[in-house]
Image (tube, rainbow, N blue to C red; front, side, top):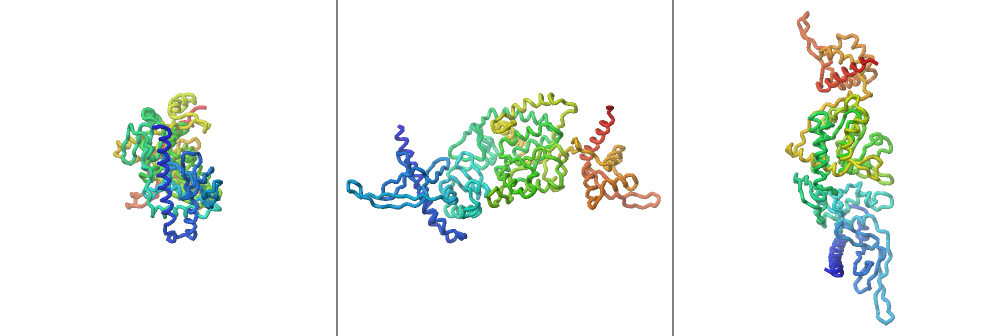
Length: 569
């Protein structure tokens, strides 16, 4: 086919696109707008009357065509529409015609134009009519690329700059307008929206069908959840290296099980195949490899770094707004996580929407659908409600006395395999091949678990922090436990009673005591004892073990501290 033939074929295709858009536009103008419950509903068809879809021919500039009139070339269109398959230009404003006598005496009709600013809501309507925006299963998508974008109310306000001053409709009202139009027109997506497919150069991962698709390339008529410029061989090499890395840094089999499921769980939540009900906590001492693993996993997600301090105070709305659409909500190097911070973590971990606003914008619902992941070196002490949602991953502490040089030598091959220097960051960033390797490894492990998420209970070691210290009551209990005593009737220990008075004071002293016992795996309870002299049973208050695993870790840490204190200077 010659260049001229190709050009003519493209023009014929353009005509078909023009007719489809023009037909849809006329349908929208004639909708029963009186049924749309908005005081400004009559303004919508009037605003659409000023939309002129431009034609193309072999010349450079598109033109306005009115029957019987000469073509009016438009050098600077008001708007360009592009749905990823076709593009078209729009002139917005008034058009008039007038008769004019040519030099040869013939009459001709000329078109004059007066451009006007195009309202934001008109741009949005045209994007829907042209297929740039599409609906599927009541969700709105932007599909003008091979990777679609799920549009939240907040994302709509950013893309179309609505919701602020000078806009006739709020973001929520704009969504109602598009929904109203879609209810009547029901336009089908111009591309197949693959809501749960991760597409790469030569393979795909279909999470809906739960299968890997080798030798499957990216298709022009499909829009995918994620698209990466990666190849199968490179990804599988990284998957093997990632598995080796987990074996080296994870502390126990149950933590390894939980760690292997984290990437696939996060991806399934991100593509809305499942709803989020869990969050992940990775904990150990310092420099154990937690951060590198999070760099790997986060490389394939829209990751939002969470600053917990920014979620409090008058400016917190702006912080919450910045987390919209995040797929992985990452809290790194968190300090001690206590009840005060827990209420913010609970919102991030369990809620899917929250009102927030950007600077200069009105409030809008932001999507908090991302999975929370916490990286901590300090104590993590959560309520029973949050504990039931937490998936714990314990990392192996590095050997005592290990030098920085020795540790760097051990981790260097993994840093080189998983990360790279980029111009956008002063630190090394995770490679997408490594992130995909972690995802494929996680998917294959999930297969062996019959596609179930049966997380295992892992008791974190909250006693390995450099800043942690047992209080006097805890020391007394642990000292008695070291003698083999597992039930302490504290009324029989006058010195313990005195320590309790000194250690926990004020209105909430009972809560302080309960928390201190909880932290070391003990609790207060009533125990029946038989009084030999009186030949009867009575109830006595006692301290007993409530969490054997935590109590064991507390005891090990206590004995270790005694050994450290006994070492000669």
